[in-house]
Structure formats: C-alpha cells, structure tokens
Image: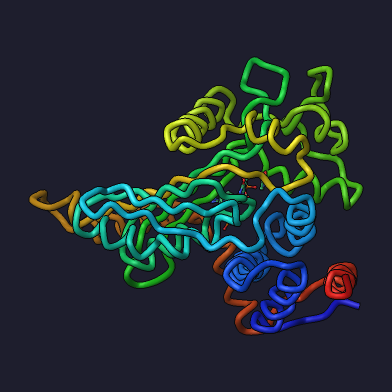
Length: 337
Ligand code: NDP
Ligand code: PYC
C-alpha cells in the first residue's frame, strides 16, 4: 500500500540509511537533504531512487564516507575553492555557499569550484541556495560518458546538467535545471524499471541506430538535446567544469569508475552574479525589469520553468510525500541492511 510521510519523517529515514551505511554526519545530512528535496518536488529521477546508487558507490570504495570538505579561500580572489576530499558534492557546496555569496556581493561575480567530489543530484537545490541569498546563479558539472556528440555514435559526453536561477523578491525564484541530453539518464532507468518504451529521439543503440528500448539505450548512447546546440553546450561544460577546474571530464570519469552503475566522481562549477552590481549606473531596476519579462512570458499562457516543481513542493508541505508500496518496501529493505 502507498504511504504518506511528512518531509521531516522521510528526511529522518533517508539520513538513518546513510548513517548506517557508514557515512559521517556531514555527508549523510547533506545527501539526505538533497534526495528528500527531489522527492518533495516530484523530481523522481533524483529522489529516493538514487539512494541505492549512492550506497553502491560507498560500498565500491569510490567515495570517501568520512570526508570532511575543506574551504580553500584566497581572500582577494573571486574564485572560492572547496576540496570535497573524495566525499559527496553536497556537503562541499553547503560549506562554500556563504563565502561564494559574500564574494559575489562584494565583487559583482564570484565562482565556487568544488573538486574531487561524487555528484549525482539535481542542481536546483544549489541554484536555490544562491538565489535565496539575492544572487543569480549558473551551475554545471560533467557526468560520465553516456551521450554521443551530434554526428557521432559512441558515448563520449556526459548528461552534463546545466542550471540557472534568478532571485525574485515576491516569490519563488526563476530556475531552470536540465540535463544537456534529451533526458536525464535517471529517466531512462525509470522507464526500464517500469517496462516502458522511451520516446523517439532519446537514444541510439550500440550500432548507432535509433532505439526506444531502455536496455539498448543504456548500452548504446543517449543523444544531446537540441542536436548540435546541446552537443556544444555539453562540450562547454566539459571544458569549464572539467578541464578548466582541473578535474575529470566525462570520459575520464567512466575510465575511473569502469561502470555507470556507480555515482560519478568529478568537479562542479557554481557561478554567482549580483544583478545590482552588473546593472549599476544603467537605467531601470534589474529585478523590476525581470518581473516584466516573466509577466510577459506568463501572459502568453506559457509556464515558467520550476512551476511544476514548486506546485509539487506546496502539496508535499501541506499533505506530505506519498510513496508507492514498492518505494516503501525499498526504504524498509535499505534500513534493514
Ligand atoms: P526536465 O526536462 O524534466 O526539466 C528541465 C527544466 O525545464 C526544469 O526546470 C523544468 O521545470 C522545465 N520545464 C519542463 N517543461 C517545461 C515547460 N513546458 N515549460 C517551461 N519549463 C519547463 O529535466 P531533465 O530530465 O533534463 O533533468 C532532470 C534533473 O536531472 C535536473 O534536476 C538535473 O540537474 C538532473 N541531472 C543531474 C545530473 C548529474 O550528473 N548530477 C545529470 C543529468 C541530470 P519543472 O521541474 O517545473 O518541470
Ligand atoms: O540522470 O543523467 C542522470 C545522472 C547522471 C548522474 C547523475 N544523474
């Protein structure tokens, strides 16, 4: 039978699973917060289904369960670095975000570079942490080689997520967050588990032929969104959030892990911008002008990105998070490990 849990109750259950698996309190806390946020906002591809992959990665010795991230902040610089020490990205982000915001406010823009981390979560929790501090944000990271560049047939690029946020005083921020592949790999896995065919255009099989079979897509290659445009944005992410920050690119991640069944280890790049600083001396208030743009978009009947997510969040806060019988069984089983 399905069951409804409060957000706090789910948080406690997920955190307990991670603590029992050997993660220290910093790692388990940050990881469970981001996973429960995914479930709360109806982002199933990065919700509780990800727990098992994280546990597998710990068991395989590919992530440091005891990691205590370290902030390396050179005071004059706009670049703040956090060494995740081989742990998950989420506690490293939590450690660096205040310094990032402080530097973006004083310098107009700043970057948070996270190195040596395992990252498998959605990016919007990080984007929202920056917009909550009154700043605009761009966040990106590689993944592992599962996507063929446009014109190619073999996995090379990652599903490389890319997210942006703009703060709004009267309500939830404008946020988009997407894989640069047509769909996140998590979606393919969820289709496989549900025994469902993929929509056309998501993937090719190992011979480079279009496929709607999840298994064939997982052993073949996924496709970038928007053809050559998505392929180029994904390549940019490899350059900026892989090579430029001295961390692994998606093909290097796959070499290191040897499998896509574990969570990828690489770096992450978070950029924060002060709209007031950029617009200083120019006519108009940037926040008021942004509101006019959002109103014009909505005025055409279009919805803003993240509205589905915010609606799901409101329901979860009001009525709790409903999990299927299978999901409850999964939690019970993981608690008993
Ligand atoms: P989706 O395609 O589901 O959604 C992408 C964005 O578009 C969301 O912000 C969504 O808002 C918005 N959106 C969707 N439909 C509309 C619409 N009709 N009008 C306006 N906006 C719309 O996301 P993906 O499947 O590409 O990615 C899912 C998640 O996977 C992301 O959070 C991403 O960070 C994560 N991911 C993480 C990776 C990693 O390595 N860590 C790798 C790849 C992906 P809304 O949510 O409200 O629908
Ligand atoms: O859904 O593509 C994905 C993904 C890869 C790593 C974490 N999420």
